[in-house]
Length: 354
Image 1 (cartoon, helix red, strand yellow):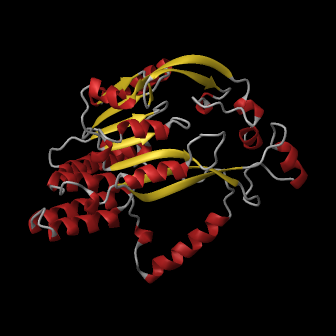
Image 2 (image 1 turned 90 degrees about the vertical axis):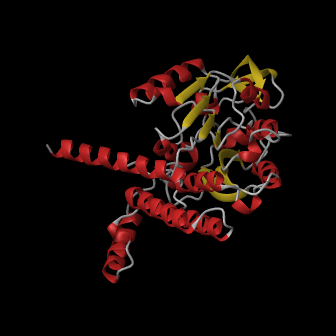
Image 3 (image 1 turned 120 degrees about the vertical axis):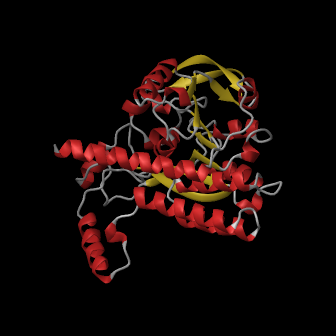
């Protein structure tokens, strides 16, 4: 009985959230594109179901079939399109290096001294190769009739930069938000890093909104146990600092950087895109900026602010976040308890589902 009541409450909250997001969008249907979508949509995007069109691009055909089944099981299969396609800047045949763990496969050869120093043999080896046909990223979206993208996510093991370069003069300028993975080290000559991607994105009018680092412990001869056994700790013990390896990066396009001047639809999409990741303060500031620039009327401003407050209340707010003094003491106790929980190695967690 209790389980049924909790399930009913969650379904009511999800329906209320989707209604709140729908009111913010006011009939506009965002186009969200996930390139390298081997698992599921990014966690924050799931709140857009029933209010957006999702396009998933993944070269692994088996992964595409799993995604189709997962999407259909949620009852929203009509909102999704899945394409078993590999993208690059110019298209053509490329060599795909397939690692023992499929998530490490890349168009760049991962077998080098730096990668071996921070991965295990079980993850990396053996490495096999196969020829992969790729399509030019800009032409691909034109071929499927997509002339605008509102949300874009890329996780393609080093090919993020060249795919973005292929989109730079087509759909990228209209994007509200881009989430991607970027390496912090040049694994081999010419391997794109965060600095290269950051230069492209800022040159196209985007600004860095947030990043989540992934840190890796040192390996020795393909194993981490050799080093950690000496110290008598496990791999991801909080007593060990770990080298920054890559980052998940979030870029957004501020209203002031939109050319030509933004309109109400762009403002609404901007607000929704940053709220997905919990930036409710940024959203409220953007709404008032739109009002001050006469993009929206005062009544619309109040309605949008109410929608943002509602969204925050349904997904992120908890009573112990309140400003009262008694809740401050509760937060101190929670902070102390949090330090007693062992680190599981995860460096960040996206917005929690309801």
